[in-house]
Each structure stands twice: as structure tokens, then as C-alpha cells.
Image 1: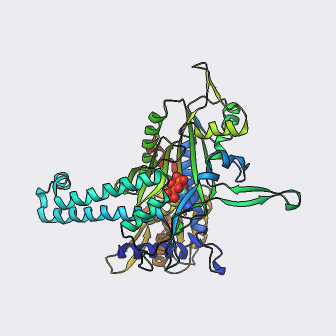
Image 2 (image 1 turned 135 degrees about the vertical axis):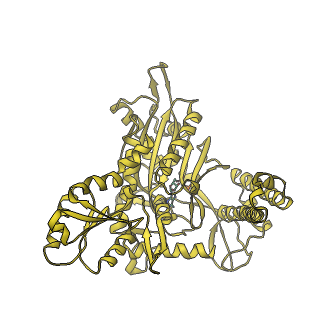
Image 3 (image 1 turned 30 degrees about the vertical axis):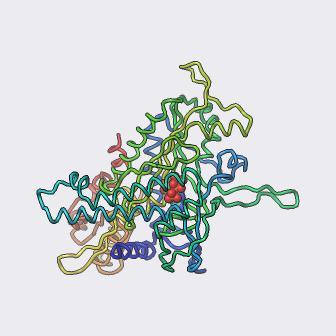
Length: 514
Ligand code: ATP
């Protein structure tokens, strides 16, 4: 784990050093859990968003996008349940004065049981070699069975406490499990309290009675309150979906792990409106579609898993997370929720407007059911960054740091470099840039040795480097160097466009989904 922590620290400093992510308000020593994206970060982020947006709106005839405002009528948050129920259970340690989420402390404890089991399995695998029957071992080994039983018992108790909103019981679990504060090492815990995560502000001048408004904690409500506008103006027929990318704000109690948990972040959400009764079928389908989207990036299929929810949010009748293996364990990147007709029914009730859909095939009016896919742009960014960061030992003994980014997501697609800064090579290189720049994010770089320039591009994940040398002036060929293999080939300038396009276009990803 210590090693993993080190890797994560390196990734965080790499992100800053190479213009991906800066702490917000850096010269004022930062603002807790708020971050800015730099020149390379914003490009990577835009490419992630483009991949998601196109996968939703181009590949599905029945999905369209919107862009709704961050400020919304405050009654919306009353109707959606956020004013009353968008809470996290928090607990303080009296010695360290640190605040924690009670549910997260218990979840971390549960994860320890799993780690213990995996250790036993790994030990046995080593001992038995080829003849090891893992499934049998998990079922019958007394030590593993005992740990699994303890885990399941804790899990059941925890799920019940969460479902019942039983704060005393959550505290009791922390006491009974002898969970200590990682900082003070003590068990001197306060009571568990609920804490609402929404940011409040005021709209209008106070003199004429300002209205309290909230910074939206999710983008979804902007879609719900617009669903009939879109349905009518777009003449959409159920089933159909509405997609949106936008900022969301949560006053997270414990903000840790870099951009994993921020107070201002970005979501990509899609609400899919279906006939009542068909929602669980669609839920299953969207689970599969979304996992395929992740896997098409080629970050490693084994890095993903589903995590089905025990505690369902007040609006859901099924929910799962897609988790990704970060350096600090498997963590939620995307949530897929069957939200029933809760939100729309609530808006019908609170607004007093009829927002039923008329189904021409059934000849009936009803409030549609909704499947939601909700993914954090920043968490997606983090998973791409973490799985791409590599330190490689080279044959000549040097180490190179390379970001093995999926080429369609890379901030810069190609860098053009004159071998020397004379003899007409810079001019020739500029000519190539001036042609490629219309289609690809292209860098021109003439400073330092060619080796150093390659390293700089490796560090930001540029898939192609193009070197212009004296031979180029004679025969219009250049050296094309590939980031991952460092292989160099001589190619015609006229072929560059096609060679680069085939690998860096978002279409190559989209086609894998078709
Ligand atoms: P968590 O349990 O980690 O707090 P959540 O279940 O509350 O997350 P959802 O409400 O399902 O999250 O939000 C959907 C997605 O939005 C999440 O899967 C995540 O990618 C992203 N997200 C939520 N909260 C944050 C945050 N504070 N910072 C960054 N991304 C977030």
C-alpha cells in the first residue's frame, strides 16, 4: 500500500508539473478540494467529454443533449428530496479534531476483510502452484470462511443501519469494530450527525427579499424539469434519453484523494425515459452499454467491476456503480440508477403542472420511469491518468516517464521537430505543422536535444513525434516515432495525415461500441 501511495503522489506531482491539474488559487496556498485544469488537462478533459457526448448523442438516435443552468428554482431541490435527505453521516474524533464520514470508515473496515481474504488466497496459490483450485479454497478454507462470515455479518449490520438512517447504530458499529482514527490512533468518537451537502447562496438584493438558491449538487434535475420541453419540441417517443455535461457542487465533508472527491466537479449524466415496468430491463442494458464504453479505452478490462448498492437512494429501485482500480483501491467512477418515476412525480406534485407523457402506441398517459447513467468527468480523468502513468527502465539504463494515454484522448496528437535549428529544417517543420494543425492538436518544438524533446512529449502522452532532417528536404520523408514502442519509421509527408488519423480519432473508439 505504501508503494501505491508513492505512485499516487508521483502522479499528482506529474499532473502539476506537466500542466494537467493545478490546485485552485495556488498562489494563495490553494482552496481545499478545488482544482484547476491546465493547458494539457483541459484538452484531455475535453476529449473525455467528446468521447462520452458522441457515444451518447451520435450513436443513439433517441438521445439528445441539453445544457441547463446551474441555478434552478429552489423548490426543485425540495421536490427532489435534496433539501431534506442529501446528507452524509459525519463523525468527529475528539483528539485529532478531524471529521470523517461514518459510512466511509465502516466501508474501509469492510475492505480490510476482503484484503485479508485475498492475502490468504495469494499465499495458497503460491503454496499449491498449478494444482490450486481457487474456488474450492475460498469455499472451504476455515480461515477464509471465518473472515468472510465476519465480513458478511458486518455488512448486513451496516446496510441495515444505513437503510434505517440509524445514526446511533452507525456509531455503535464504529465502537464495536474498534475503528481508530488514522491520525490520533484513538477511539474517542463524537456522536454521528447528518450534514447536508448542498451549497446555498442568495439571488437578488437582500433589500427586496433575496431568494435562497442552491448550487446544483447534480445535473440530473435540469434534465427532469426540461423533459417535456425536449419531448415536445423534439417530438421524441419513449424510450428516449437526454444527455448533459455540466458542473455540480457538493460541500463534501472529507475531501481527499486529489480530484477524486472535489467540492466543484463536473458530471456527464444521461436520463433515459422508459415505460413503467420496463425499467429493470433497461437498467440491465445500460449497465452493459456503459461498461463497454469504459472498456473500449483499453485501460485493462480487469480494472473494472460492478458494485451493486445495498442502500438504495430514496428515489431508486436498483443501482450499481462501475468501479475502477485506482492506486488507492477500487472506487466508484460511474453510477447507474433506476430512479423510478420518483423525480418526475415529485415535480408534478410540487409544480402543480401535468407532466405526463402521452404514449401514442398504448393510448395512455403516464409518468415515465427513468434510468440514469451518471459519471464524473474528473474521476474519469483520474482513472485515465493513473492507469496511463508509467516509469520505464530503458535499455541504456535511463528511466522514462510516459503517459500511455489512449491516443484519442491525448491532449497533443503529434509534435513536429526539426532535427537542428538551421538549414531550412525549421521552415520545413512549420510547413508540416501548418498542414496538420487543421485536424490534430499539433506542437512545434525546436528547443533542446531531440532525446529531451521526445521525453517531454512522452510525459504528456503525445502519441506521435515527427522529426524533420536533412533527408526530408531531398525526398519529403520524415521520421515518425511512436510513443509506446519508441519505434521509428521513415514515412512520406503525404502519408502522415492518414497514419495519425487512424489512431487518434475519437471515431476509432466509437466504432468499437457499434
Ligand atoms: P460517492 O459515494 O463517491 O460520494 P456518489 O454515489 O454520491 O459518490 P453520485 O451522486 O452517484 O455519486 O454521482 C455520480 C458521479 O459523480 C459519481 O460516480 C462520481 O463520478 C461523480 N462525483 C460525485 N461526487 C463527486 C465529487 N465530490 N467529486 C468528483 N466527482 C464526484
